[in-house]
Image 1 (tube, one colour):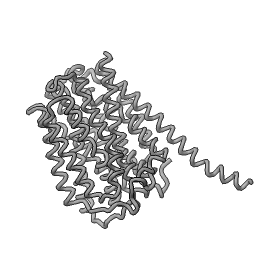
Image 2 (image 1 turned 45 degrees about the horizontal axis):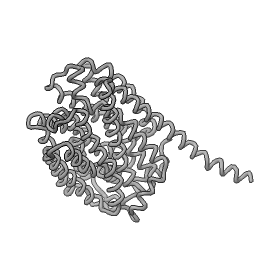
Image 3 (image 1 turned 90 degrees about the horizontal axis):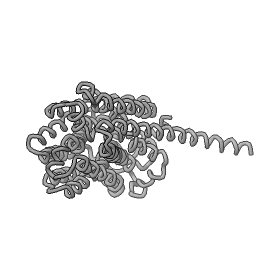
Image 4 (image 1 turned 120 degrees about the vertical axis):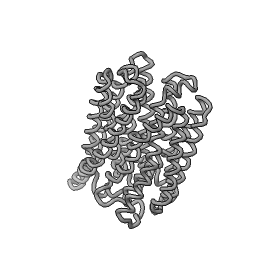
Length: 418
């Protein structure tokens, strides 16, 4: 059930692509990726610093987990709102503005005096996240050589996944050494560097002809858009159910020393990098098979964490495997481009809104299981159930698309018979 050729070209017809050399393309993707690196570091580092945050603002660790959900809620709300309101903006100017807001939000988060203010500031910081990645993916796909859209999007998302390998361990180390607030200052500095690179290296791509808020809202009329978003929002939540509480799980269950946490976080990041690279290549070859296959794989890996978490070596290896489930990201991004028609910006941004709904849902359900006394390892079962729910939505989407494809044939036959 791969998209038709016309659908595959959807992302490429939203704006006129400037002629760029291979070197210019790589510089542009690098600049876009640095922005993704900043966002990825800011999003994931808090998960490794929950005990420090909880102690500093005088709440429990599950309550500190609400900070994760607040950021994710900001992404969920910000992605559609900003994508619609900025439909007529030039893409480079929009990317720069979004990254500047993200930088300011992280600097402000570092100065938050308490629980409520930190939650509000993390919510505000999350607002530009989804629109940035959506527009960055569209720019990369527009500039990419033919037949390499998923790999171009994967290169942009490599900044996000690479953040978990490099940015998050560094930020976590800074947070443990100087306090969790230093981690957000570090993220803000990276975001400012991204602003400079975006201004210098990304071509000034105009919005598509006739772009408007109303046209972007047209994406919401397409049921395959909703199916794809549902797969991301629910099926991908399993990863966050486990990773949101990975530090206390490793320390309390596996007996990992505190100093070993950054090493395991780096393994998770390595898994994300590998999953992103492999997943984007597979998506260019067979989009829908990649989506379905990764969901089944995720369910198996997340379920195994429940047992593997009791030993340091097996826990660390399974955390690496959990990171590889991000392979579904580029595939879902391209799928949204294929089914969104001329409402590309909103659909692309909503992909990351869906991922952060997964973040909020996974963190919340994982916290519920822990608070109910089911133990730290119960997050593995929560994650596996979410992945299986994603498989169900995927199967529904496939069946619906096949039914829609048969319907015009049936109508045509009836017409000829009459």
